[in-house]
Amino acid sequence: METDKKSRVSKITKEYLQNRYSKDTEEEIQQWLIEDEYSAEKEQASLEYWDALEAKPNASTLQALKRVNARTGILRTIPLHRRLMRVAAVLIPAFMLLGGIYYFSQQEKMLQVIAAYGETKHILLPDSSEVWLNAGSSLHYPSTFRKENRTLTLEGEACFSVRKDAQRPFIVNTQNLSVKVLGTEFNVRAYSGDNRTTATLATGKIEVKTTSNQTRILEPDEQLTFDSQTDAIQVAKVSAHDITSWTTGQLIFTGATLDEIFKTLERRFNITFDTGNAPHQSKEYYTIKFLKNDSIEQILHVLKDVTGDFSYTKTGNKIIITPNI
Image 1 (cartoon, rainbow, N blue to C red):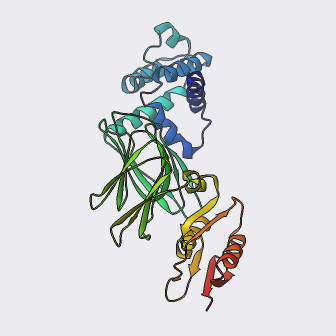
Image 2: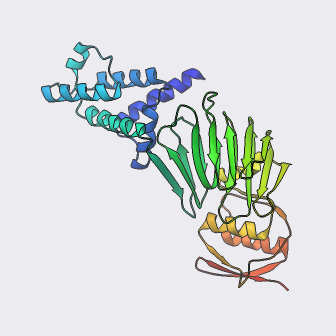
Image 3: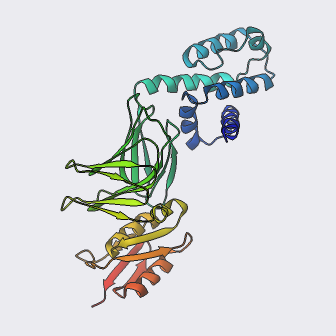
């Protein structure tokens, strides 16, 4: 397994140097390259790429390489005779760019990723942890985590796969909850318009703390729900797989009201529900599953039949809900 990881590190590094990544991916790869983990493998991949080039050296490129080495530390160990053999013009700008990223990371540059309605995003964090950001959500985090912790701020919903680091707790802050972990997989749902904020644990262990300093430790397949109106906490057994199913395109609702379902559908399909002068007041809770490729029309048809509580008409991206009396 370790050999496979090292092989993948080498492949990613070489493909970056060959400009094979899209602009959207460039910044994530650049941040990953300056992390300490697998530094030897990254350097070796750079050396192999260097040796495969056939550009001839000149005074200006050698001086540029010297300046880049001083700022990044990458390729620092290349013997002199190997430097004189090949100097690649394409290599110099790449590592000059890495040097700039390293400089800014020392200033704790803050980054923001936004997933608009109708889309989800996959993010590689500076410590190689992964985040899947759901529609209508935003994530704030530093370009380089501090030595004492790894802190992010979430508005909306995200699923996290956290790389273990016992020395630096991973902390996700939301408006009503703070989730602290060392290395695990979990889901947080904290949309600003929802009264209920949830934290669901898939593997490992997490500590959840509310704004009123209530603290709970969750075990796998447990979900904590915090009601911001009543300040009440509820912990229940759930299927973490179902909760995180949105990362693969499915929609699984567990104990959700129609209001909550409508809000999720708005974000998922980038549509608007019009429920009249007042929100839909159904207090029934529904558990229902929809497949990845189900259209909004198919979903609404099923909901209408299951609940028997409304009818609807669709005009463009607007859906008018009429409660059945």
